[in-house]
Image (cartoon, rainbow, N blue to C red; front, top):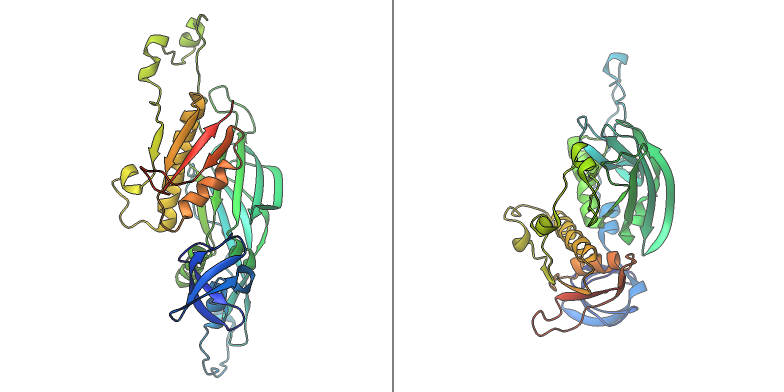
Length: 345
C-alpha cells in the first residue's frame, strides 16, 4: 500500500483533493473530501502533487519579441552534477531534463542519474533501483576516483511510486584495513523532490544530490582466542585482550528507541526526510550490534505517527537474511509503536 493515513490524495473521477483518513485493506481506503468521509478503491485516487506541478501555471501575456544581438546571447553553461570539493564522499546526483508547455513554462520530463565519486578511491558498485518493491533497473560497474558515472534515466512519473536506490560498494583494489564491502540506500518522497526542483529553478542550479557516504569504512578485526597476535601488533593493528573486549564493543540492547529526541540534541530545523534518515542510521547500527552478538530478538520503538519510519524499517527487514520474522502488534508498553524482530543464524 503506497498510501498512509494523513496523505493528501486526488480523487481521479471528480478531480477533488482530500486526505486519507483510514486504510481498510490493500485495496480500500476511507478518504475525507470537504468534510465528507467515504470508502474508495486505492486505484481510483492518486497523489495530487503531479496535478499541482503540471497544472498550477499562470497564463501571462506574450511579450513583444525584441531583437537580440550576438553579444547579448549568454554563453551555454556546462552541465555539472554538483560542485563538491575533493575527498567529500560519494553522492547520487539528479539532473532534471525539461520541456516547455504552451505558456513557455519548463516542466520536468525525466532525470539523468549520476554516481559522483569525490573520494580518492576507485569503487566497484552493484546498483539497483526499485519502485513499489519491484526491480526496475540494475547495474554492476566501477566509478573512478574524483570522477562521475552515468547510471540511467528516471521518468518523472516514477516519483509517484517513491523510488528506492540501493548500492553495494567495494574497493576496486582491496585494502587489508578496509571493509570488503558495505551497503547503503536512499528512498525519495514526491513532495520532497518537488521542493528540490523548485529550489533549483530559484537558484538556477543544474542538479540536486544526496550523500551516500563520506568515508569508506574500515574493516572490523576480531581476534580469535588462543592465537598469537603479536605480529598484528607489530604491523600496527590494534589488538584487544579478551578480558577487556567488552570495554570496546558497543553494549547490547534488547530495546532501541528511535524517537529523534532520544538520538540527537540538534534536530530542530531538520526536515522530516532528514530526521528519518538519522533514525534509519541509528536502526542499522543497533541491528548490526544485535546480529554480531547473535541476539534472539530485538524490539525497535518507531512510534505510530503516519507510519513512515515503521514502513521504512519493515522494507529493510524484508531484505535481511538474518531475520526469521517480525511483528508489529499491540504491546502493553509501546502500543502499536514498536516492531519486534526475531533472528535466525
